Image 1: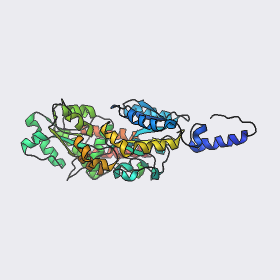
Image 2 (image 1 turned 90 degrees about the horizontal axis):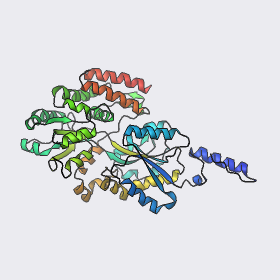
Image 3 (image 1 turned 120 degrees about the horizontal axis):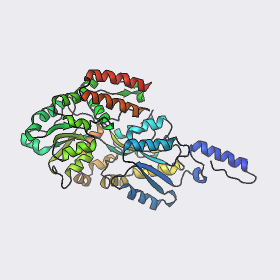
Image 4 (image 1 turned 60 degrees about the vertical axis):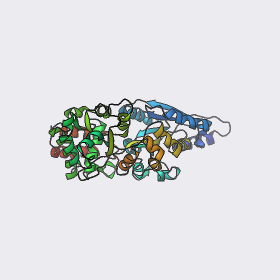
Length: 421
């Protein structure tokens, strides 16, 4: 706390300082009373370099509220760890945080980020499911910034030769992966199956697509012990056992699986839209020969897990009003257009997915919109990191054939119950 000495009004100043400190949960600062002033925005590494130019526009228009960008490591785990260290520090240096959607519940439950007033942000213009990723216990704790959903990429040239439509169900996917892929020397299907966060996503999508869930009541209730969960995990385990998911896919993360598809070694791939962009780029061996559809499910359209990031205000923010103003700027239509056009990141504003100019440049947008509108968040829990570790370990064991899907679900229920207590 910064002590201010003023003759004849020391007690009054002390009361004001204490009140401001308690109300903001932040460092004392003369400009805190207005809530406006300079900001520091922490984010994972900006791989496309677009964010600096976006923030430069804000800084030119708001010289008294300039933003300093702090880029943390590309690794989500390392970024999360550094953010938590800062948030636990009563004199933290980050005011605004660009957090993975799966961290919102954890950060909110620990009191590390501030609740936000809904009426300050254009939530009604967003794709509806993305707003749910920013809430905890019925309260808005962040604002969606970019979103994402899994897509099924496929070799449209090969399916056309075979007179087969892109799969809409698991059985159609299995049939083509078994019968068609080997004819062309390809592996059938892959996702992100290394035991890390990507496998948690793939497993949740399989369970959700079968009509099940993993947790309920903000992580307080375990719901995974169900027929749907056994069906979803069984679908993944059966693929490896029968060979239409190659064993090597058990080592794939996003980039390895994208490269396998882009190199022409896969018929089908579950990945984020960035993989479509990479596989379509000039010089890609499969450029012009790929398509994308929503993820299939047991009897029709499946369900993706929502990806992306949310903007949250640190509980220690020096200038919370400026932070809220910056969030409104970053989620404005003009900036969201730049998020897609410059950063190739899926925006949260619904109208951009129907913009003819953007669709010409990003032809997967209508498919992505359909996927986002039917998507769901990852299991919400204040202990999400522990939940994810349990899911990825158990599902990997099931896919590797070390346990049956039935035993895996029982183990999931038992271990997740221990985490929830």
